[in-house]
Length: 429
Picture 1 (tube, rainbow, N blue to C red):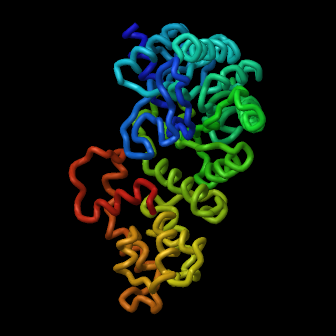
Picture 2: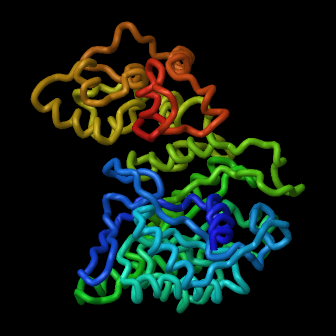
Picture 3: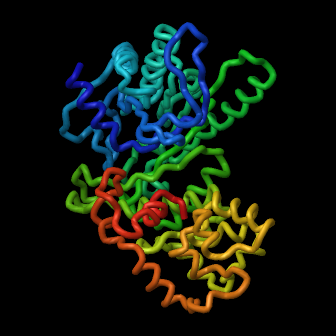
């Protein structure tokens, strides 16, 4: 059992589509566990707690031979498969020891997609019905499975996800010939429609069964194929609009297998590129930007400037913005002003005119914002030219360590200006 656990938890690390639950599932008094919408995830919750999921594959014995995947059928690696009963027992035992608060379950394709989905469903059925487990469960829908099997899985899971994996049909045909774009989008459509229908039924009948009440998400691999950031971001925007996804996740490709079709195994994962895409995703969801505004056809993000700064430098004609008069939507486009600080500005300026010191107290990151704002009169000490601003922005934040490793919450005490750099890295820009 321990050897299986070691193999299948390690194999699950490449799937990053796992985050806050966004749903409440309370125990009825006869079972154990609960899911809180404040955030069940595998790192940090929205209220600051560090919580965890058992993130595991049911099996890494795959019928497919996708070139980018470490579990592909032609790869010579240790193989293992859990039974549904073993998955359920592991989850309950780990929960009772306070190791985890929920489960993230995925799998390689065992035999065929429908059979794999049925095995996963059985594991969740045992957890929900026999062990009376009310904790958070995220399940991966397997593209190609029939709709009845996907529906049964969604009745037991809180959130479901179908991984896009590669951003274009061309890349799928080249690197994953067993998969098709249609086979991936079809279950996403079914889950979207199932969630809508379920929400309507629950509104009419209190005890109607809930289908994937926490919604669905997806993941794209970045760097395994040659799509530009513009293409990836446009696809991301389209997925949000068409399927109502809760999140689109980006996973920097880790060269774990050798292939002439893929980057060399000596290539470092494009972690900073992944980070810029996450920042841009934040701009799409919360700041009112569109993909076409942020990038033009074939473009990639500037790795040394966050996407909002990059956009602002390309539209200097819109700046400086008067923080005492500008509408909320325009404030959101100022680098260094986030959603929370923009709301504070709109509220506070009703009582008095705001100056730079007041903005700093509201959480505005002046190291970036000061080049794009004015408080009644233009800042006389700042010359608003693109080259001057770029030099100033790059001198404020050192990006050298970002190109070599991923950001950690457990690094040594940040250097001067490190707190504001951390705000940027966490998307508070």
